[in-house]
Image 1 (cartoon, one colour):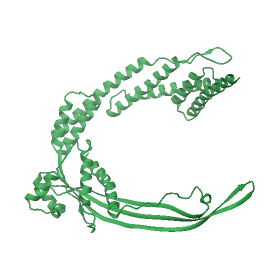
Image 2: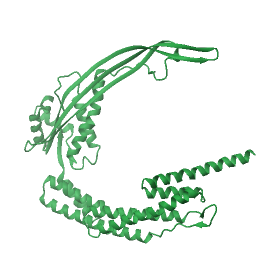
Image 3: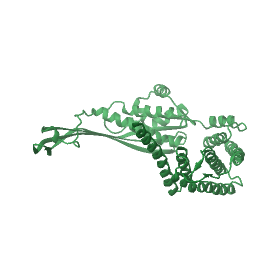
Image 4: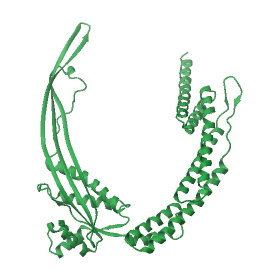
Length: 411
């Protein structure tokens, strides 16, 4: 008897799984996601081949999935009849994707067990093979990738003839794009290396000047500068067309020119240093504002009551709760400029601000513990970070923001 009950429960779980897949199929069909509806219905039938709801779901989802894909493929073929650049490659890839989906569905249909209603003969789901069409679509995709690669290659050649840093940079990107379509296209690899070498900019990042009037935070300006340099040098995409002058090189020029640390952060002096170093551009920055508030603790009292229900009678318990809140904050604002050393032209400027807030909430109480309640904060008192640590947290957070703005320019 126990064995029969166990088997019955197991069959119910098995049937429920098929039922859930059928429900999913119906939901996907209602949302016009016909491929997902088809796959869910097939999965249900793999679990229970005679499940009526799944059979009906597949009967409505499969034709819709085939019809939708074939319709889109027809439209895509019309628009790709004539090559028009990257867009044609994208659409050819979409054709391949849709044929791939149809082949996958076809394979799943072929691998279904015999499907039949509990009363009635076997049911067949008709779907043709799309293997030949997929093969042809892949060949068409490769042909258009070759055309796109050649188009970008020719554009790169034209840009390279203009022989300016910016045009060489664009040329390198065109050769790189050509290789993204055909990895070994002509001599695109060596042309990319040539263009990249000609496009490299030497940039000096001058330690940020602390203009906030707050000097108690030590070398916070150098901390921010170092983190920006580190984030840039660790990002290959950002370093593709730039070379950053090292701090040792900057220090050497300072010593040779008898410049103090204040000389480096002065914009005019930085221009002189940039020319001596032979850089194309310099990045100068400032800490414009530093603010920090010491921890402040506030408190409030309130009473909680709770009714306890017991056999001997109901009674009310109470607790007098004192809730404490400790808060501290800090903020840091920075700005930077990117300047052309040769022309003194401002190429880019931007700024960023970072705020930090510390909050600790905890309670003490007098009375019954059960009356305190579950929604009352239970955390223990925490110590707020020290003043310098709060500012350093802001510096840690603001450096990546500034770096991202610089990356947007150099990439």
